[in-house]
Length: 291
Image (cartoon, rainbow, N blue to C red; front, side, top):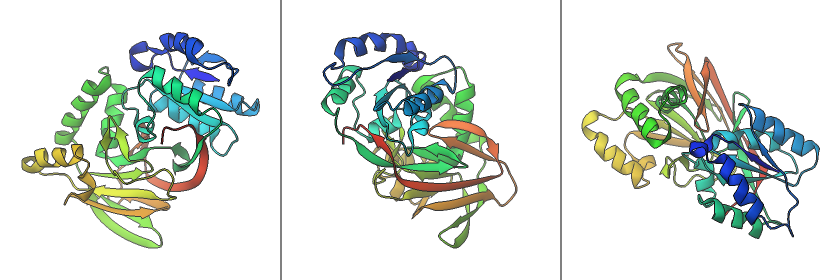
């Protein structure tokens, strides 16, 4: 089953159907193509596919659509396929899935009998597959998802705006029977290596190692900001002096000052919360990847 978000990728979804009909190898797959009609519909369709014992469900959309579909496939016999037509495409990039639709379909044809099994993160009982985060990047996602400007331009606009407007907080963090306090601009929980757009927050993070990489970032001074951005784009941000990291499987975070926490799940913001509980479910999702 192909589940297509018709408004992803500047409304490329409907055109994807024609490529699917033309390119999918019918010697390997009997398939159907369904368009989503509202937020949450992809999750419902994927859950139905699991009940009907569909072998592979392919999510055609951005990270939000992929999260919806994958969330319904966790701990099932159904395998996730991905046609990345969104903006960031974080999980697809991490899994080396081609961004060109024809090449992604060729990958599906080539791997019709093979799959990888990956870890799944969970934040306040919501699944994530790439990155979840608290603080600045979550506020960026919160404003981006509610804004009118889409794509990288709209996202970059919120990155700049919130750098000047968003204040750091002091967090209480519990993990592995330890408790620490840290003042941070943001805290990231990395199952995969990147936010999207090939921007890697933790280049060595793996969806197969049974750990979450937790990164605690101080707000960079304006005068060293250009250097920090350079570290980010040469995949060394995790080694920056403003960054502290550790690995864990069960982490709890709250604000020492009682501030509500902005939280994003795979780049999609949720409403602010009081406490964030994060854990890792090892090897719980089957996926067709290019790794």
